[in-house]
Image 1 (cartoon, helix red, strand yellow):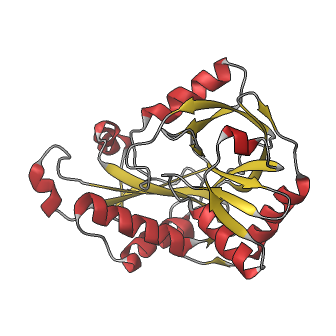
Image 2 (cartoon, rainbow, N blue to C red):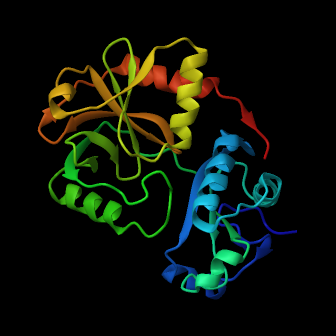
Length: 271
């Protein structure tokens, strides 16, 4: 029986693997993944994670592994790990990313874990850079730009970076979805972005709570008219943002509390 640990040995297709067996993956850029938080052995929004993996696999490989198979791999790792941990599922071509015939091979699954994380406490100040992630709707590996712009932001005295698209609209941040508040309505950027699983959870729970929400193109002019902003990802439903570039925003605790209330309303399930 393996020792329970947040550093549980990674598994590919359900089988434990060594670091040497994983090393070729460091140079394999054709893969996609989802990251989730496990608390008390349960996961919120598991259906959204499975949907993300299914749709990205169809886009990348033309086929997708059954949800039941992926869920079984996740369950095995959760059952043998700590009750609270971070978990990442990566789908990749195990038989040569540079081989055109790899499209005819069933993709493989890497499941790995790490210590639980709740993200930074915030509030955060974001730089603003002109950048559009390639294949923005897919959470894929090998995106050096995200880390590059994060480092540049920190060097400039910010905490992280937000992206501005070719239309001059705020879209997303390095590893975050952006969300805004006008005092009554939750506003999501209208842009080409990765729809996060946390974003999906918050959207459906806000709908259940009858909280108004909409999508809108957020220019810097529009940003100056809004009451608050936040970022979210699998770590947290909302960290306040108090600046984007030179635009200062007030920290709106009722807005942040609303996002957290929506997340708390989402049921957690065993994988």
